[in-house]
Structures are given as C-alpha cells and as structure tokens.
Image (cartoon, rainbow, N blue to C red; front, side, top):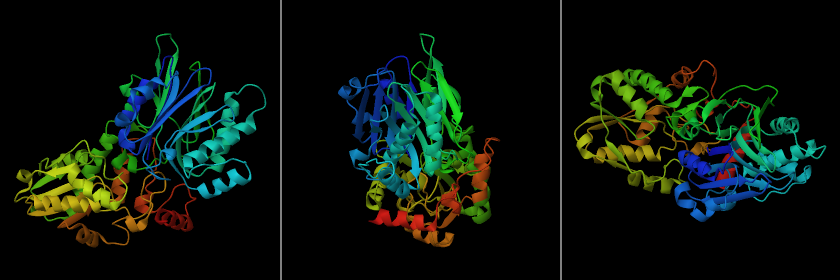
Amino acid sequence: MCGIVGIVGQTPVNQEIYDSLLLLQHRGQDSAGIATAERGGVFHVSKVKGQVREAFRTRDMRALLGEIGLGHVRYATKGSASSEEEAQPFYVNAPYGIVLVHNGNLTNTRELTEELFRTDRRHLNTSSDTELLVNVLANELQQEISGLDLDPDQIFRAVSRVHERVEGSYATIALIAGYGLLAFRDPFGIRPLILGTRRAENGKYEWVAASESLVLENAGFEVVRDVEPGEAVFVDLDGNLHTRQCATDPRLVPCSFEYVYLARPDSVMNGISVYEARLRMGDRLADTIAKYTPKDAIDVVMPIPDSARPAAMQVARKLGIEYREGFYKNRYVGRTFIMPGQAVRKKSVRQKLNAMSSEFKGKNVLLIDDSIVRGTTSKEIIQMARDAGAASVTFASAAPPIRHPHVYGINMPSRQELVAHGRTIPEIADELGCDYLVYQEVADLKAAILDGSPGVEDLDMSCFDGRYITGTVTEEYLAWVEGSQES
C-alpha cells in the first residue's frame, strides 16, 4: 500500500504535489518522494524518510522546478522500510530519462530480476520491485524507438509488453523526460488509480492521476473516471490526453481491503463510495452479531477510531443499542498497522489510544474494529477496556478472519503472523482475551462493497478466502515470501 499522484500543469506543480501527498499520508508513512520536470526535460527529485510535513524543507521545494511532476508516500512491502535508497520515485536515464512511482506489489520479482540481468543487460541497486518495474518499462520502450521522436503508439506498445512480463498488482505513474506523463494500471485493477482534469487560466487542460479521488476534489480537478484495468494514459506536455487499452484480457477485480481499511472514507474508488461501503458493512455485521451474541451481553457500542466508526454507527442503529465514543485518539502517533515489528506496534497502542473510564465502567461493551490482522493491537485494546472498568468486552470485526497472506501490496506476508491462521474463532477469542468475538461473513463483506456499484462484479479477497485472482500465486511462492521475510 502506497499513495501516488502525478500532475501535468501549466504552472509549477511542486506545491500541489506536496499538498496531494499530505492528503495521501494515510497510505504510507515510511518515506516520501517528489519528482518534477521542466519542459526541456530536466528532472528534479527529492526523496526523504518519514512523513511529508516533517520531511520536506523549504529548500527542497524550491529546487523542485517544473510544470509536470509526480509524488509518492511509501509504506514498505518490499525492501527496507528505513532505507532512503528504497524510497520512490526511481529513475533510469535511458531511453530519454524516466522517473516512476508505483503502488502495489509484483509477484514475479525473482524471474524479472534474472531476465533484466541476463537478457536486458540492466543493473539493479535495490530489492525494490519499483526499480524492477521502471527498468522493465525502460527496456520495452527502448525496443520501440525507431526515429527521433517518441509517439503515443510506441509508448502504448511498450506498456502492452510490460503487462505481458509483469505479474501482480501495480498502479503506476511515470514521467518521460521531454515528452509527458504516463499512467497505467495492472490488468485486474487491483490497486486504485483515478484520472481528473481542469482548465488552466491559459485555456489549456491540466491533468492529474492519483490513488484516491479526494486528491482531485481538494485541488479543484473534475473527476473524469478511474483508469481502467490494463489501460495506459499518456498526457503530453501540451495537455493532450491519449489513452489505450494495453492488456489482452482485462478484468476489474479491485482489492477489498481498500474499502475495509486503507482508503479514506471520503474517497470514491471504482465508482464505490468508501464511506457508504463501510456503512453497509455495519448493517450486515449487526445481523451476525445478533445471531451469535446473547441479547443482554451488550449495553453500548463503541468504535475503534477512526476507520471503524461508520460500521459501528450502523451496528448501533440496527441493534438499537446506544452508541458511544470510549476511545480518544492521539492524532500525532503513526498508524500501528504500518509500524514495523510487533514490539513497536504493541508499545504504540497506548500512546495512540486512551480509554475514557467514564464510558466503560460497569458496562458490557461491544467494540467494533475494521479488521483484525496480527491481533496485537486488538488484544491491547481489549485489555485497555477491561482496565477502564468494562464488565465484559465483545469484540467485532467488520472484516472476515484474515487467514491468508496478502501479496498484492499490503504487509501481510506471513501466515504465522496472522492471529486467525490455524485458529477457530473461539480460539482467537481466547488469544485476544474477549468474552465474545464476532467476524463479518465473507459473503457479507463482498456484498456490502459490491452493492455500491453495478460496474464492479468481483473483488480480490485473497487474504480472507485464499483465492489469488492473478492466478500466478503458488504455494511455493508464498513459502518463499515467508522465508525472505524471516531472513
């Protein structure tokens, strides 16, 4: 999971890229990067560790010249989270010069690394799959060059061959020096990418591509549409838009976890409102809670802030139980899901949340969270509720049990880290320390999301059901990923 944005403007874009990354900060806090390009083709790049507001300085921004640019916030799923060398964007100087950002996770990195070294004669400096991707794109673009100029047809043919070589999930934005901005999405549309436009003061069109629609709305861009699965979009320096479907068998199967947890609620992805999807999750979860918990076991419903709040409100409304806010969130502590290491994650929970004893004392509380991944945070929160005086604690997840690794861009690589792997629901309840535990049903989650859009017919739910929609994820690959995480 990362956040990406690219803008083709008529005036300097450095400030708008920065502002966009602030809006996408929830998608990654390990590092951030901005690249801009002058019309003559000169790139300016700044990559920093940490969050956007603290990392970039005035001198960094002044050096980012140009009317075209892109940005990235990183949450590490490949390579080292602490290494600035792994931060995006990545750059290659031929052909023309390409700088690229990527949200997703490639699943054939071993094969691509060998191909790039043995066949393409290209050198890699990091273990980042983004560096792999920019080199594959550069190699395929190099094969297309037949004259002095680069045209959209050549670019689109190169992207077609990228789709043939690369497996996994990828939403990608690249700058090609002296030519323009290229954006494309994997043939399954697993990771989000949305396109917007506005008219500049000189009458020409400006364009933006970003991970979430809130970036477009905040900057005054009109939402055009989502970039289609397998589609490539190229905007030249004059603001002319060129598009082409570059995959042979595209199919829209977006990641369900975007709607459960990752995306901001005020975003719309693939035509589906994230906020409304979470409300529907709450409606369906309420039915399951009523089915599996005694009627007198719950006095009050409380969310784990913030992403579980819409679901919790709907659970309370549908069950006819009082809704209360029992946890106060410290806004200045990073999201524990993103923080590396169980020890760091556990330590940060009480820094991040404070339980108000007046809301818990003597009550049978129902806590609603968006999901339960490793269980470390949930266990600590349940204990906090007991320490605050709760008579009993029922815990409910708006998502089903996460029993399988997520290999398409979310940091769930090892089955042994997942609290639901190999355990029954009563066993998970014992591990977490709650009196009752309720999970959303898989079919209910799918229906809650898909009810929001007739244009989406399927979802990637691999971490819940073990069905990897690209069809290329094997047991051997999963074992290799787990082994590489341990080494």
